[in-house]
Length: 419
Image (cartoon, rainbow, N blue to C red; front, side):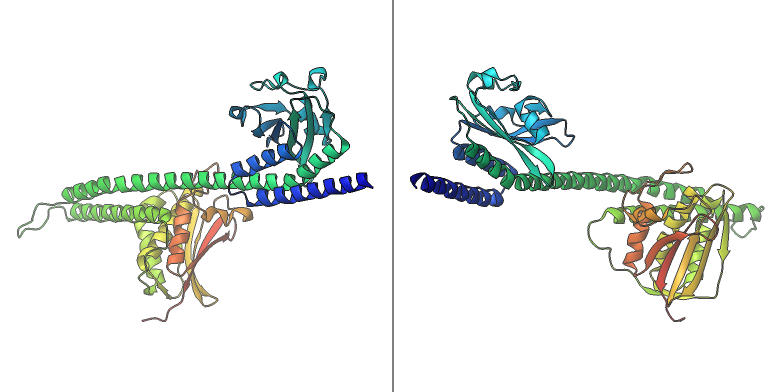
């Protein structure tokens, strides 16, 4: 009767301990605190000298010391045991507990470089941590005095390991996710800072180009006489206006790039009824030098008005035409069209390039997403900027297959009554 009561008391003590460990582990505020709780409570529960937790590396080749209470703490994150090697590695591979009464006479015990355990370790008990049928790591307890671990000791340590397997792995996954998020945030901030710096530095040479262009365009006054070469004057004036238009376009492009890395919403758009055909034709004229190696086809429809910001709409068209020129082979046709559909004015920019697979048709609008082909390499900025600009004017922008082959980008604008 006394033995039965003692066994019952021992089981109750173990249950109380497991409850305390679960409560402490789930309320740990940091990853380090969680691991310290695991090894501290385990050592005390098994009345051992040392408790250590090894976690299986993500490549499943080694187990790395993650926490210890009794070994050299300097070796945390440094000491490694090969998967399948030594007592710890063997337990990880077999997923079965292993008790060794005397490590000095057991060939399975592996001395870990940097931790001379044989100097003070006599006995050892190891159990695997398993979660979702995957080995997470191994939990060890060791004693300075020789000890024959009982079946109750093994069951107790296994219960601790079963309880902590999921807690430890979820904590590890959360820590990795947080580290990855911090890393991605740092990368994004560095990219944004670099782009902002580069685009800012473009302002000065653009201003210089504009100034020199204006100087080169100056003609001596005629002072009451006619030009001896009117055609040359007109041609030079045309070159001047075309150059200034491209400088203005570069200014808008810099603004667009800066907007693409700006945190927060775009400034309010200047929405007004706009003749869509007029804006498209104007954009096509400005982009004529860019289209020198391609054929431009304007499929003019009826006069349509849309509620939009004409400046931002031009920027969107510039991004889309530049994208078409970049990916479509020379001597192919780039088509611009506009029509009414489902209550909105839709502008299409189609090319005869390699096209865009369905799984990429949304990804290409993500920042820095690039789909490199044999014809071009993208920067991952233009289409993202175009999508942001579209959203800022209440428009939708998407990609679909072109009529024959290639890609077609569509801007859907709210229709407006003619004014």
